Image (cartoon, rainbow, N blue to C red):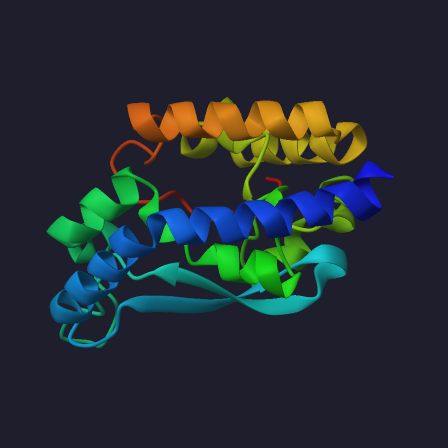
Length: 201
């Protein structure tokens, strides 16, 4: 009952309330990023959702599109803007995903949506993370986020799939708020985001 009815209802109500509360800050962030990024405040990328179905995820764009002389994007840490660093630190870059929640292709809580190229790299067990909708936050995010291995993240994701409940989701939301205020586990040491998953080696 919770998974199929109350969880989606809770997602929609919470997304609407949060969007209303943070809309002034969101508008300011969008304007600031539009200036810094030459008119491109949003970052849109294809991600796999429930069942591996692809959808477009929306985030605030915290990095520029600067490239080297050969046309390759510079490392993340070199493209992260000053305001982008602040927005990432406060997790404001994730707020536009609330529109994904309203559209129904994401949930507030669930395994984070990763890159489509990772789909063929998962083991059968790891692929079970796609048995539920991806989330803005999740069990892996409140248990290390970018400071744990990919294998550990996937273990935590699959554990969540098997144990999701209202109390667990509520706990994850509270822990997420705590981590945002304390700015915990935002980046992997030495990089601006995290390293790419290259399979189970």
